[in-house]
Structure formats: C-alpha cells, structure tokens
Image (cartoon, rainbow, N blue to C red):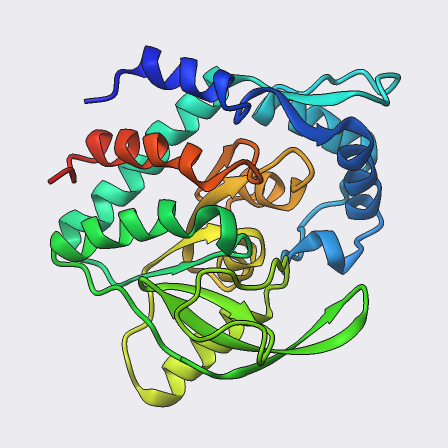
Length: 271
C-alpha cells in the first residue's frame, strides 16, 4: 500500500508536481490561445462562457497551484502536490463507481509513449472487476491537422488503450504512437461504436482530446492534464469533465506506476 506521504514525495522527486518541466511561457501561451478559442488548445471543448486570459490564470492557480501573478512570465511552472493528491482521490472514486456498476469504459491517450502503462494498469483492474473495456474502430483512418498540415493516422489499441499512429511509423501493438491533442480520435471511436451497434462507454479515461472530446458529447470523462492544458480544467469548471488531475504529463513512463498503484488502492481495485 503506497501511503499519501510516500506518493507526495514521489510526485516531487519525479517532478510530476512541484516545479515541473513545463515552461511558464508555454502555459501562458496556451491561455492566450484558449481565450481566443483556438481549436488547437480547446481539445474539442466548446466553452459555455467567455474565458479571458486573466480568468484562465485564476482558474489554473486554483486547480493546479500555478502562480496567479500575470507578471510572472518565465521559468518553470509549478503544480501544488496537494491539489494533485486531492484530484487523484476523486479520480479513484470515479473508477470505483464504474467498477461497482460494471460500466463499459474506454481508455485513450495522446501521450502513448508516456502514459500507456498508467492507463493499461487501470484497464486491467477494471476488466478484472467486470467492466467491459471497449476497443472499437481498430484501424480506422483519422485525418488530423498537425503543424505539418493534415496527416492521416490510424486508430490502434495497445493493452486496450487507444492511440493513433501514422501508417508505417510503427508496427501495430507498439506503444510509441503519435502525440496528439485532437478530439477527432474519440469522435471516430464513438461513431464506429454506434454504427456497429455495440456498447458505448459510460466513462472515458485519458488525456487531451480524449477527455474533452468525450465530455463535450456528454460522456463522463476523467483524466490527467498539465499546466498548459487549460481545456480539461475549464471542462471541469463547467461540468463537462468530471476530474482533471494536475501533473506533468511528459516525464518518464516509469514515474506514473506509483500513481496507478495509489489510485487502484484508493479505488479498492488492487489485486
């Protein structure tokens, strides 16, 4: 059993929280783009209200613990580990609820090289608890706008976690998929599930467009988000994202394993 104190220490040592690698400049740029409703940072969310840069800075200070001083414009951003721990507790409650009702669940990530292991551990535990872990639309084509223009990707699943990859880059089953913020993959998965007449997820677990795209469509969604991903926290504030856990989403994949153990212990899903 990983104690809260031990996990707090791990968050700081691994730089998942505390001073993180995300530069303050990057976060502030994301807030400016979000205020301008740039789709690259909306991640599939259509906010109900007008969010100005100052509003977003206050929200992110409240949700993540970043500085709310608009004059603080450089250096590493900071995540309060207490906020991370609190959000992980709520995240665990949502997983426990899904397990209790044996809900169908979908996992998806835009950070496959970092987060596949974290989500796969949760998927295994929910499956063992009787949940159907969904894997629709395997191989489906998704055209995603990138900084290099529109690129064709294909949906794939690694250990029942959805990701996208460019054709020919890696063999199916390889965890090194494409990094994407797009909501198009989750929309494609849901569309294919409807066409096939299969089960739809009652819970989506992931990050980036997987969470915001599902939440915008009215599906319960929970996930992880860095300080430069304001969309998940806006979605949480507006009631379309159930839980957004603040942490650095770009550290080595091994550093997320203790988080998975902690969450599964809290959700009473450890085996």
